Length: 169
Picture (cartoon, rainbow, N blue to C red):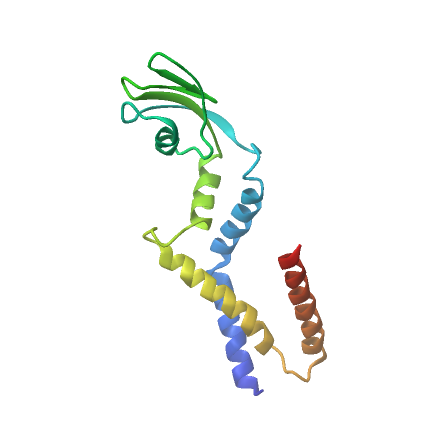
């Protein structure tokens, strides 16, 4: 491989890396935080008062409250009691506690979990393509005859093998 194309890949790799440093930090931090999403780590309780449709029952109430596996504990008159709160069927008033992350971490997680319905979904696609470019361009940064290239291939092989093992664990 010629010196000019090697330098071109290095330049693209370098400047794209600088450009994406901030978003990579966000994805790294939110990825770590998301690892603990099934725990209450770093979460604090927040009291929520909202007005829902009146006369909701069972699954419809759970969907309105955005709670997975919703289950009413008991019903007394018009008041439905569930874990952490109550719902008045007659008025639609709901009062409950939620556990939430600090706002900055919540925003990072929302960015990390972006989907095609989000108006900025194209940023996630761009970021994915950029990461794919990083993984491929690393192989064009050194001459194939260089010792560091061969050593890099061993590390790439080890990383690939670890990925395959993680798929089946």
